[in-house]
Amino acid sequence: MKIILLAGRKNSGKTTTMHKVYDFLSAATKTKPKKNPISIKMPKDFHCEFTYKKNRVALFSSGDTLHLLLEGIFIYSDADYLIIPFSTGGAIKTKVLSSFRACKNQIPINKTVSPKNAAKTVQDKANDKDCKSIAAAI
Image (cartoon, rainbow, N blue to C red; front, side, top):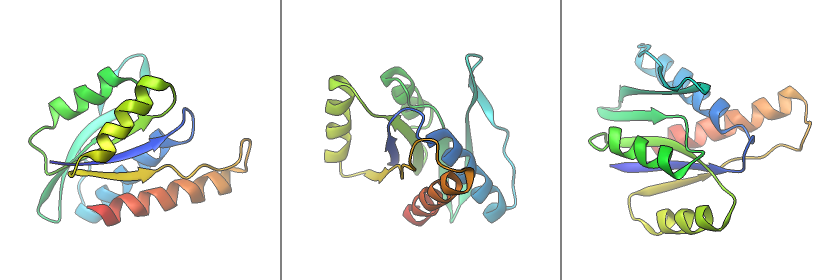
């Protein structure tokens, strides 16, 4: 499995980008798999799987904790690609991120950050850019 890791700070738009990736894959494959909820406490987060370019591509939209990151990897360990965000910040998360970046099967995508309180169009452009980067990595 190759892991496409969307790394960025908290509230930088990682989940929004994951929804855009879902929309992109839905359009590209002409399918709409169910967005399975990850937790009642995180209503925007979901996980699902597509077949895209003859690959099993899994999306797991919550990586705010190490537990959730590992849960996504465990659930989709047999996928060809796992696209998962990872919330950066803190000493432990920095070490985990460094370890991931050292792995050969990891494709890093750094979240494009728009200025705080930026207009929605600026945020949308940043999320669209990241979505295109992720799609190109598959």
